[in-house]
Length: 323
Image 1 (cartoon, rainbow, N blue to C red):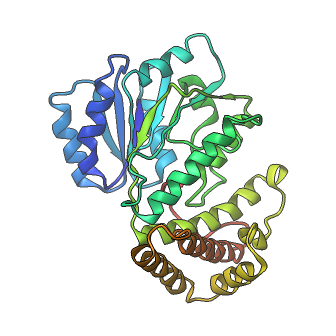
Image 2: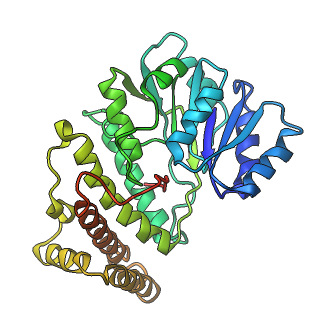
């Protein structure tokens, strides 16, 4: 089991103990991505009584480079890669290991629905929960392509395959959609995706409104980067595609709001409208509609900003926010 983490020291004990409760877990390797003394100290204290815990830090570089470092340190023939806010159910790790006993060149993916995605959750968590369930419906349908697009967070593969392909990309440097880039690279390397509903885990997703808006801008940047790195799959990026599926009036609104330097303030305003709607008109219409519009505005803003950087994106250090 390999996990990358940063600035979530309060979650580490629960994560470590949940993983180690499964006797099939040879170890849990937790890699702290960058300066984070609280997480390193928490891991040091936990390791005193948990000999199967391996914790260490690496210079800040993003989730996938940190996971690569963890895979190099891991001892098992099979590596299970978990997000640091995803907790496996009893038996899930044993099931991951069993799937690879005879299989080769396989990426096994399990479900990780949001644990707290109800009305009391943030708009970010509720929208993420709905999007994830839609993704699972798609990969369980006739298309059944697990790797394209890949939604990481609860997956496993043989360590030799992981080392051969590499989790981090030297070409894709955007701050979002690293898992989609990874899925394309897995597929190009001849690996086959397998979705197993018995590989169950729960996603303890938490994002504030400001994190939600920042994530949306990074989504836009990441889309541009995906098209640049994988043109054979995706073709050229069209900025207007960010508003696909909207009415003509809303497409104009997203383009106009997303193109202005006031995009974030306008998006905040739509979030406020949604909160007011939910408070004053409970059960009437879709109070999340303004938040969806705010997300599109910030995606447009991020994509436009990335398009202004020839051959790259302004993302810098690739951090992994939840999708």
